[in-house]
Image 1: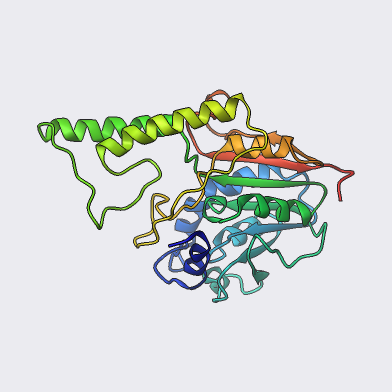
Image 2: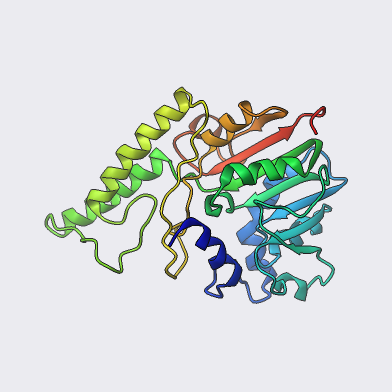
Length: 282
């Protein structure tokens, strides 16, 4: 499957591509809780509109609205939002983040949760988000860290222990084996540990221009563990992109609710990045 076909998958598939909670508000709140708290802690102002990109069934948009934001949802699909069973007034627009159908400077904030790793052209998506932001507005990006050396090491240890318990035998790759960003077999996990370590060092030293590293997505259900990701999403890219882009600056790139994350962010945890559009930007 090519990268653009992933967009078709998210537009039409009913295979639980998005969060479905059967109207269970408690489950939705638990799932999106950290994202909502991070957005609320980092919006420059709670007045004005916030665009919730890749809102899925609308639960994250609903929760942001419950906290006082004028949140609008957008995603690829045109189906009714599950969250509208509770709040029929949730504003929703079917759209691709690479081509947002909004005027320049339409929103005070743009936020996304586990979206960017599934976008074929990450650079174009970021530019679109900045375009629709008002000067001084913030782009808040939450997702996985798919170049995490810490997570890669954990997978190596897990697969090594499994092989040890099986007397040195490990699971071989077969036609139905998923394609995971950190590998699915013991040799793959070692390869990805080296790959992620090398790429992380290169990005921390400095890439100019920044390279948004793509991967071949695995679209076969069940959709989990970022098998279907087409971009190795990571905070280093977003910081570098902001510093290399006129009128954009990085404000934060670590989770605010985890001890030590301000120092460990290049190697562990997820992607928790806040970018700000300059007040003189257009």
